Length: 63
Image (cartoon, rainbow, N blue to C red; front, side, top):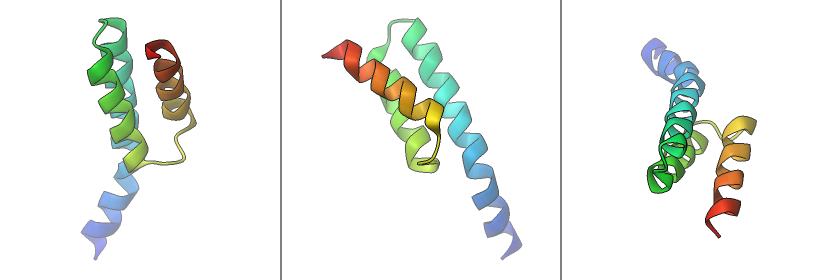
């Protein structure tokens, strides 16, 4: 039970990593990978405002 709790507590941290990886992909021009990373970040932590902002900004650029 404790390991499940620990995993649950670490999800926001993992989400932050995906958000940073998304930014890195964005800076390299790999918009497809950036979008995937932002979506992964949000699936792990739906309350991540930075991932919402970055993903929305990216989608605004792509369209």
